[in-house]
Amino acid sequence: MRATHRAAAALSVLACVFAGCTPQQDSSKVTSAEPGSTGSTTSEPTASETPVDPSTPLGWGPTVGELEQAQEIVAAMSSEQLAGQVIVGRYLGSDPAEVAAMLRKHHLAGISITNGNVVDEAQVRAMTAALTQASLDDGRDFPPVLGVDQEGGYVSHLRGIATEFPAFDAAGAAIESQGAEGRKVVSQASYATGLELRDLGFTWVFAPVADVTIGAADPTIGTRSASEDPAIAAEATAAAVRGFDAAGVVSTVKHFPGHGGATSDSHDTLPRLDSPLAQLQEQDLPPFEAAIATHAPAVMLAHLDLTAIAPGVPSSLAPEVYELLREDLGFEGVAITDSLGMGAVASSFKPAVTALNAGADLLLMPVDTVETHRVVTKAIDEGEVSRERAEEAAARVVAVQLWQQRAAAATPIPPDVTSLAQDAAAALTAAAY
Image (cartoon, rainbow, N blue to C red):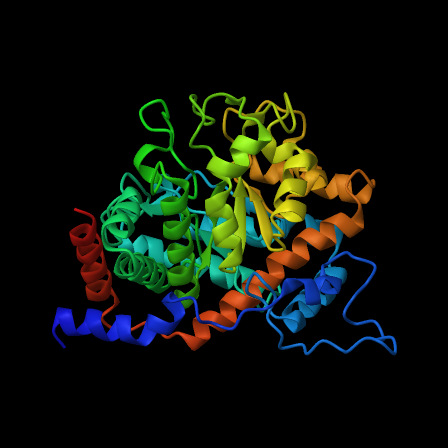
């Protein structure tokens, strides 16, 4: 099949998905299924209640039944297993056997693979296969969190292995110039990226970037942002989430509540953001709201000093910021921190424990994965992190992995996935420029 026919066929098959016409579920009807809550969908209904069908989808991917299954799984875990299930570790090296042994020994939810772990395509495939097997060997029949920063542009850790896509500002440009047709192109690009990542063994992608950049004064996000216009950024973010969902890969909308207005880099220091809440709501939150409305499964918390919400405390460690995400925006999925090895939080006292207690479900790339596992295990054993909070976090993670397993099984990887990705990259570039 010629490339143009492949791209047209893929767009035709996915037209309904990318138009947002998948069944919508009012999450308010299933809030009793929240992990760790006293009201569970497993309890007997009262006379005025109707039992919830286990196949009912939640607003972030998994079904009610998958969440209940996840709750049962984590309830049977030891403290060591539970602590591991909320950590996505970092690994310094490229040996598949060594990182797989670390995942199994410490029961890690998964590993974030960076360009420092990557040698070539064969080694990447060997690493993801070894990690998947290690998770199975640890007694888990759901896939591990195998994530990578593959945003397009310069933040693409699989450069030279996966297809190169333009930076995400191309998505905003495509939508701004072509409207609905541009949204389809953006969704197709994310769909093709997701399939290609799955083909390489990944289950998560740390994208899309929902930040609204302020332009030249923004040293961190820049072209990683779809636009300086919140409305365009919202459309691009939602379109990308639809594409990743359709590909059966877990997307990670980042960096809540918006890093695009920060004038310093959280990799190095804790940026201070003095925007009042009303400005955040108008400028920074619309892309996250759009993503959540589009059933985003995961949201990544930024490391920012939000003086209007939690002054002096990194936002990834602040309960008030998780409350903004959960209560104001209604997000019920997996809340993951940005890397806990970044300069903004690395020197904080027990940042993993603080983040868990604040509301995080996944702790991304702590400075020392093994030591963090020990610290979190001890915190659970000694009640510094309640068993209920740890189970709530872990159950969300397991539930989204059960969804990913099901979604991937329903969406086979086509044999011409590389050509599909190359066509999608070319289409996005053409639509944007």
